Image 1 (cartoon, helix red, strand yellow):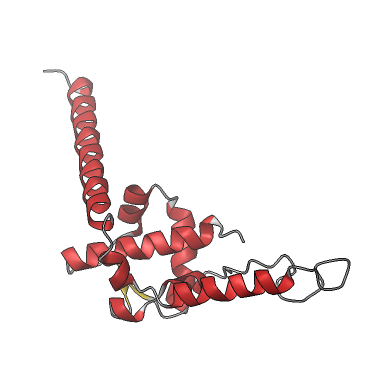
Image 2 (cartoon, rainbow, N blue to C red):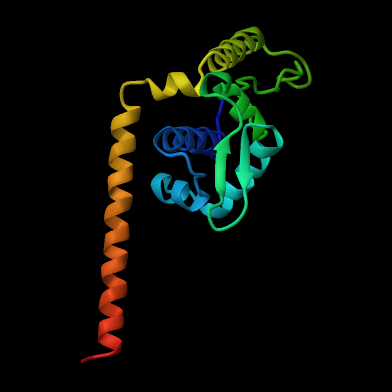
Length: 169
């Protein structure tokens, strides 16, 4: 089984959105999520388009625009997020068709089928609310939030220096 970046980034982005939503009432911009999670904004736009179509997020246009979760935290499970971005947690090489060994079922087909079912059941039973309660989530979020503030302050200082150099007194 290989969960690609598409599934990982979707879960990470929605967890970030859940964290920000719990701290503020305004919509969360994709550029803020992109900075905190080091994910390309164009990639996030593709993911959030799919998440919106599946009813997991809502969007607001305009200067104060961004995204909100469309459902309560305890009603969004990880498997729904992964499925929304067309990702699978299937551990079977044949993807369940039973043609894994030259067109026929392989010796370990049932093992990989059972593993896939266990993974899917586990992810169906983990919600964003539960992820928020996990031990490291809050501390990692605080670190990411403070590091993006430091970057913003550095950017402002650079802009200020550039303007003062352009117009010497």
